[in-house]
Image 1 (cartoon, rainbow, N blue to C red):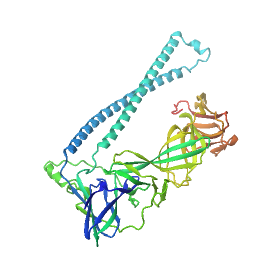
Image 2: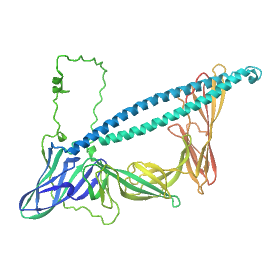
Image 3: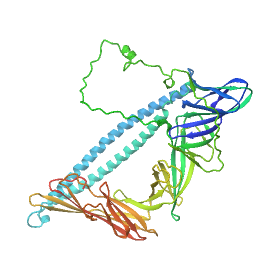
Image 4: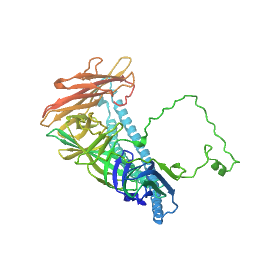
Length: 573
């Protein structure tokens, strides 16, 4: 009695993060005595050690065997497909090689442009420094001749033209390099798809089930097995409702599989477990230190023929012939299980069921799904999670002068949220793309919700004041003043965290002194008015937490001095 396994209905599919467990139903009528059931056309991605058979009916499962035979016949259309894939692969590899040469050439060109910019900046700095040597008496401008002034004017005109040209060329090379990088990424993805699947189409795989019945009987078998080349990943829609101050997380699972079999109208479960990692923690070996030995080159052997070397192999072993899963046995016996007494739970209402285990959580998708073998993501709904957030803003104006809305939330749902991309909607309007980190039930987390244009951040140009002092040891002191304005045009008060940099000295001769805001000695945090604060974090950056009332503007001030020897040039100032 033979069945094509792809024609057997799918009872259940549990998709893990790196593989899937498929359960199919097989119905058969047995005669008295022994009956052999053969399930053929198995997926090339099947894990033969995972095959399990359960059943119901007046019969006994005596044996379950997995069989794999290598077939020699290859159809002509398969040969043609392989030839086309080979040609396409060669074309892509040639194009990739050419693009990498272009990328290397652009990198060298960009370095040359940057060198020219540094030379121009050095000349300009030399001209401005030489102009500071003022005479002891008289007006400095009056001492310059017309010819000198005209030369300086011509130099600045040349500096302006050349800097504009170099900036344009630098930007052009950067855009070209980004375009080539994107094209190389696409070629890499195409090459991965053209990689041949191991042994696909070259093996005849079967499951042989031996049953015994005392009389004629109808049996129903549930055959389950693991398959590779299947996975799922999370994706989210974060829907923010500003009036209600609520967040709803629409939790989706993107299922991909290229196992060679279609899962039609299947009950799907998504599991956070990773069976392929293994059940035991790795053993950490001992690290031994010793003197490094100089390896002398070994002279080549002239008398021994190459065939003899190849026959011996590298490392003393012979060269084994290729065989599926490096196993010499064609028939492998698998475990046979007795009929299970616990039936699969039926879905009564369209709500997602959550089952938490020791090593993972399983989500039962509330409707049946069809997942074809096309290596394309198919979206299924896991859950809709309503949450009560607290909103605040954050801004790093030196890098991006915007106010980014952020929500602080506690995951009050029973769902484990895995790390994944998220689309952010504000009052049903798409505003940004973001991402979520892994969050367990009852854990607090933060999620970014994009830029809010109603909160305006202005990063004022920095003001520098340079002074020289010292009789014997000449020192230069630079006073830096940086102001940031935050304007709240909303009808409600807001809380915003603004971060800016305070330089950190890497040399004892360079002294950095913070003058505003002021901290007490040994303190790294200070309270401000109206519930605000300022803190010096571990990265030596200042974080202001301020509350801004509706239609008001708050100014944040950062003042510091940098003192260093006059003969030195400071990088990063």
